[in-house]
Image (cartoon, rainbow, N blue to C red; front, top):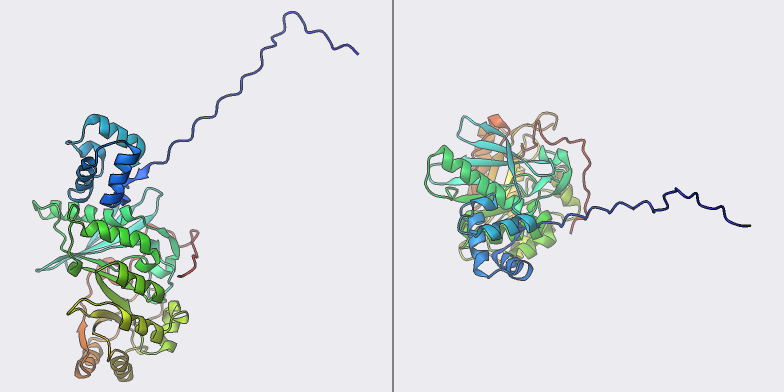
Length: 386
């Protein structure tokens, strides 16, 4: 059978297949790199000389620059190259609340629309920032509002450090200061479990302590954990900052009711890790003990706590509970808290009642939950614990 002839005027040109748009190259998050990592990126990926890395690093981590345009001692050619290959992770201030006690809570929006909070606590002798390490938290402690969110995601090293830079800018402007780094102390006690995001935490600490960066002293940085026992050993080996343990109970029965992590690593395992923790001379581990009325604030609790800590260089921060609606716990009365402290002191345990800051703006311990921001009903992650 002969094929049909093609009409003389037919267009036999094949319909061109539209070309697929090239996938944009993934930008390198340079604000999450140590100076060593940044040097490798600039020399190996961009073909630049090594000293450029120091210039870029100082702009980001000493002056807190948030764009390449600010970096006036870099050539225009390099700045344009950086725009196409790199990014500085942005945090946008979404809200600010000021307490009657001078505390300021900042809510930041991340580039993927998440929300995190940082709390600035000024006093006569120091300017302290409480830093978040995750969006939400997987630990689900029953007295903590952050735990009701679940874990949305880890913060990158750049996002952790960006909180410090952003609050430095806010404080400098608010208090009309000349210094680029008015903050003196950092406590990693905000949203999230720091040791659950260990690699990003470690890189952030390296940046924050670097001489070419903010140059915080190890003596002025404290990291708090609910008790991820395997990570406590790594934390002691790979960092040199101070450790705080969120204990909050004198028996396993109590602790397992309020802190699910205790079902995997009980108090004995946690305290054994503390005994093995490498402490610099003169240092102690801080144990945080949230006082919950008629739950963990009896005389018997105090005596058990003395026994638990007797062979550990320790101090205890007693934290009057910050009541949260719907969680079912009440704060210990002031007289009972002072009596509890006296019992510990008489048992040769250094104990202090920690002043709660920012209660009226939901900025105190256990209250960070992005009210008006992050939605607790959004999907959460359930990663395996180490």
